Length: 438
Image 1 (spheres, rainbow, N blue to C red):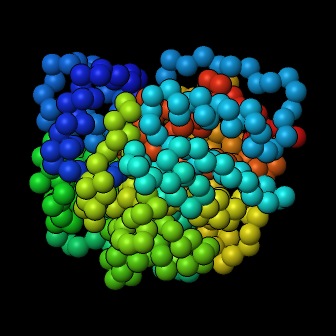
Image 2 (image 1 turned 120 degrees about the vertical axis):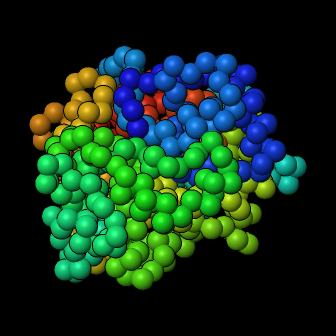
């Protein structure tokens, strides 16, 4: 996640990339935040002369750190009702019908209940169905909020303390980096202030075979060979590697896989039955296939997921119906045993270097991004992006209004992931009005 990058829109590159994906039948399944959380195709100084391998390397693990070069659009003078209006439906239809071949499902939730709207189809196949709240999409880096919710839940049980040095939970053979004796803590990993790089240096993202076979031992080796350049806890720098290390610690402590942990501690509690990493029948038939520049990512790609050591950074797939349950729990609309842990993830813990739409400021909790519109008013959110998808989960804790949007194309085609940075186009302006109107 690097600041001051520009989106790369070159059609030639996209066609090369899509041809590459068809040939290897592979979809990268890690996203943003910050796809937060997500893989956003924003590339600095990219040119059409880049090789396929270099382009793949530039795309994978590029997360969404800030939204640059956007001008603020004033909010509407009149408040709008919190509902899916015909105007909103028309806006979504226009975006989808602009050559994307994609689909969008949006869900709204407040104290009055839930609302859903879907437009588009699950694929280009003749038998494809119209998407709805039960359709499954990749949610990318929104996955990271599940990882930090696991941490917060285990902190509440006394299994961990946020200030614990991570070396306490890693094999003694690992040389955990320090900054002049200052150790990295669990909280540093969960707030992206550890000083660890965006991605493991030994992760060969341009080599599909080595990427998919990446192991825990390689992750440990990367950690041992890193020298951090800032004191832990002092500087925000988005790190997929940090969240991967955090997930590894949670797995090692419990003896459970990441997917098992999420299911046991979160999904089962909230009744989120269509959220998972690995798709199998009948769930695969509910998947909306991803798109890039109107080109559909092949169905053969969906069986290939990111390697287990990297799963905590962006591997989950879900439906809007399930994500509305998750957002309802985060908003306090439903009370569960996760209540205290969830509230702990929202607490501001550090400033960030994220650039939003003026005059909004952005902070980080345990992975969740907290945008302050003015003192006393907050919007809490996270986004995601992988090849073929981008997504957003966002809510106003004061008005208890929440919105989930899942989309089966990248943000350059329909910009969902960047809405959290503030109102900057017609859709984001509409969403922010929904959240802030009283």
